[in-house]
Amino acid sequence: MPIQVEQIEVKIPLVHPFRTSFGVQEKKSAIIVKMTDEEGNVGWGESSLEETPGYCYETSSTAWMIQTEFLVPAFKRISESSMPSIEDLHSAFAPIRGHEFAKTGLESAYWSLLASQKGKPLGEMYGSTKNKIPTGVSIGIQNKIEELLNRISFFLNQGYKRIKIKIEPGWDYEVLKAIRAEFGDIKLMVDANSAYTLSKKDVDTLKKLDRFDLMMIEQPLDYQDILMHGKLQRQISTPVCLDESIHTYNSAVMAIEGDYCRIINIKPGRVGGYYEAKRIAETLGKDKVWLGGMLETGIGRIHNLFIQAKDEFTIPGDTSGSDRYFAKDIISPHVTVDDDGYIEVPKEVGMGFEIREDLLKSYTVRHQIL
Ligand code: OSB
Ligand code: MG
Image (tube, rainbow, N blue to C red; front, top):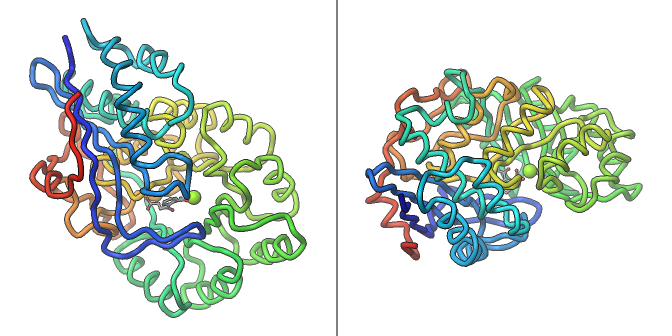
């Protein structure tokens, strides 16, 4: 039962540039993966990367190469005569080190194909039960505090109940003070994307942020430095959350059990797929995990929606509505957030949304059938 695998690289303009401490993004780039079996069942997945290696070493180009040369041939070998199990898929990918986002593109397409073959909603594959998920929005660094306050009120008016802002030295204390003054005790958290160090100056600033009663501070220090995050955690009361540092199930469990941080931002792409995301969530449990995002196109967004319908995801995630990033997302309908900051989880077979192949085509920069 050979399965046809297609790779589609897309670049989709963002409705607003997204600025973090490591750079500005104007387009969403991703590798979309489509799998088709002999009966015509279809699965869709996404390697949700960026054009530059600013967040992690992988880019859309490295994912294209690793998938073409190693991951797709490995998948073809195990799926020649029958649909492999998820454990088989992970064993086949294990000898290929790293490249977690590239693996996730194929793995998520596999889960989606499996749901379609079984005639079940994708959420059932992930062990999900909830009908709706709580979510939030991540807001980039702006030029002026005034602009940021306008952005926040725009999203609060749309129903978002949890706000995450990006910070960096010089765009932290005063900004948070203004937010608290304007919006009171909204659910608020910050993400530094490694912009700080354990220098006295930085630690003093981070200690001062304790007074803002933040839900957490995400990845304040270097991505390779888990130990230092533990040292920082012992000096501040705001819970430290690790994002960029965590690439495996083992490192997630080690960071929590070793008290290096209190919370893990699970991005399925960063930890090697939805199976690993599921294992981390099930092992660490609620209050310790939540689901982050990579500005996913509609396809990755749907997978993120379904995995968050698992019981462990009670902390609102970063899966905002499609419109937050795209004028025209590649799915129909768009993902939407209701007035209470929740997204409804579809119950239909498979993805539960239509994939707009016409739009997908208009955003395609290269396409390959393997
Ligand atoms: O650090 O969480 C991050 C986007 C790109 C790269 C890194 C990060 C982010 C976000 C946006 O914060 C999350 C989203 O809206 O998908
Ligand atoms: Mg982050």
